Image (cartoon, rainbow, N blue to C red; front, side):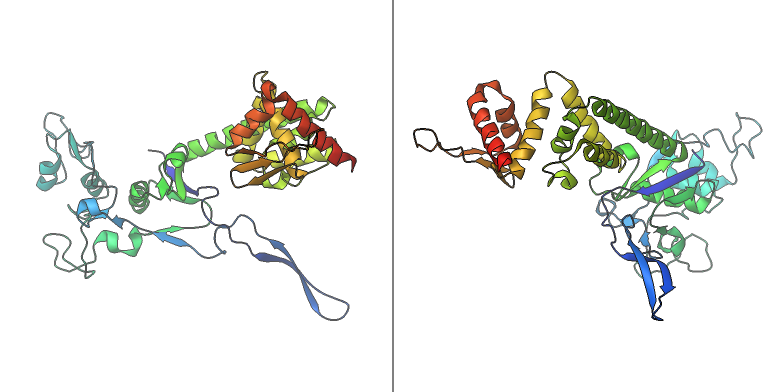
Length: 366
């Protein structure tokens, strides 16, 4: 096992604390003190506060704790403890009781493996709890003591940011297995998508470096693509601003190419989701068969901004212009986003598409 396990917050799944952090305090000419501040945008809690996690009771275990230790794993002591075993044909363990636990068994409970590894007594890491908080934990104990998983040392303090567990530390190793047993912690970055309740995910040093490398490569690819569309020298870069569905772009009506470039550059550098959205837009733009869809997304942006098409929830509505004979065409409604994109990109609707374009041109002349 790797030397360190890192528990990271899942981006976007915890509410971010919005508050002003004081950055400077100076005395003015009038003798009063004035403070400068900046709004925090990344903290999920105020500095100095923590979330405490522990092993949770499990209904399937009859109320016992889900410690992550009560599962069978391959027996690492099947051939004895190397410290005591000189001949594999005569395996030996620390004492007779542990010999009964490990001898001849291909698999044993992880709990017993860790009890032996950490030089604890048999049953020390039991998942059974005492409702009163105290009980005789181990057979032969002369003193009543709190079960291990009801102690503060079996609780994990989650800071705002990375929580690092040193797997060479017995306490941290136990906390690691508590973490993988919880349904609010994904067991890897890749499992976030299939762990809807996850607020954190577990990664290892080498995995964290790999994730950062992949993110850097995706960002570099997106920036390279941005430079390509900028070098075209036409309004394609402006269409990208309109085709990408981002709240910061929704109110854009007219925009210069330089401003569009700066907007997209800042957008790409925000994070993985934005990189993915930009690269998706680029892939749609770059393929002949999907280019009409890209163009339709950009057109729809303009139609919405100039109130030619109206949007409420998932529904889109268009009131076509009056015909030359004075008649009024029926109102057109689309109930899905893909339906309106098909309408705007499908050649069979060319007459209606021209009507929309003419309405937009008329608005732009006003």
